[in-house]
Amino acid sequence: MKLTSGHLTFCTNIYAGENWMAHFAVLKASFPVLKAQLSPNAPMGIGLRLSNLASIELLEDHHLESFKQWLEQEGGYVFTMNGFPYGGFHHTRVKDQVHAPDWTTEDRVEYTLRLAKILSQLLPDDMDGGISTSPLSYKPWFTNAEARKNATARATANMMKVAEGLNHIQRQSGKVIHLDIEPEPDGFLESGAEFIDWYENVLLPVGNDENLIKNHIRLCYDVCHFAIGYEPHTAIINELQEKGIKIGKIQISAALKAKLPASVSERAAVLDQLGRFDEPTYLHQVIARKDDGSLLRYPDLEDAMAEGENLAVQEWRAHFHVPIFVEDMGLIQSTQSDIIEVLNLQKNSPFTTHLEVETYTWEVLPTALKAPLNDSIIRELAWVKTLLEQ
Image (cartoon, rainbow, N blue to C red):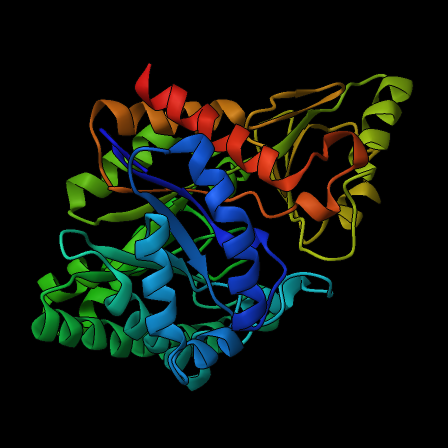
């Protein structure tokens, strides 16, 4: 839906359908219900997530034209896409395979260009479009600095192929589509500082046209991911703006947060609550902050749980997208305050037009946080809308 500070939507990676017809079926069942509650008198946007298989199928037969007709009929429009997960994202063990195939591969290039082709057909004429994507690759897959450097070079060159493809689309259609890179813990790019360093010292030097790069390669600001790293949101956003590096999309999401008491019994109670989020589908990286302010990194929640009695650690933040409208969950909390800080910056001085709520973990949440899916989506979007318009 169109707000004064941008277009607000939700990401359809919440839905389990991996082929196009299954995904379309759940959209047809849910979107009219959501729109009737959230935007009954005006068009409402969709943040479309397509697996590789669904992207191939959508371009076959007359599926894309049928989808366009349905969007027009229902008052929907697509302006942003999630191109991070390539394959299955529900009802299967995803973990580190969410990064596969990574940006060192032609498969990732072909998939992303296919998404751009689809988006160019769906995007309203008066809007820019974005495709969020993985942060090059996954650090634990490359065990030494030389291998990681070579992988970074290959991944960057492949991203430039996509940027050139997006520039071709703009020349042909007049539509601006950008690739929005999404840093996350243990990705090749996992912080604002790493993203900026790569952008200035690796990406820009490989291109011949700085304007082309800055137009078509941008940052996806996933609030959950940046909050896990205790990042200073205002400082990062200001630095990006000063350097002319654009933010293509804000992904509005919250991480788990927990203060770990020094008392052994109190700490055990907190760890018990955290352990309920240790599930086998997704990666739940943890960044712990010690008494001296230094950080410890764990590749998954189970690894952090094994060192839960480390009394030098004061706080954990975990990569588990929890409902954004909940801050206090008993002995543990969410990073909702980080969302409020970022959205207040956006409200006061907009730096993107794409706002996408991305809570995809409804099926694997502890029972106490579960609710009917449509009700949960409506509550999340209404919470953001209220925050941005108050």
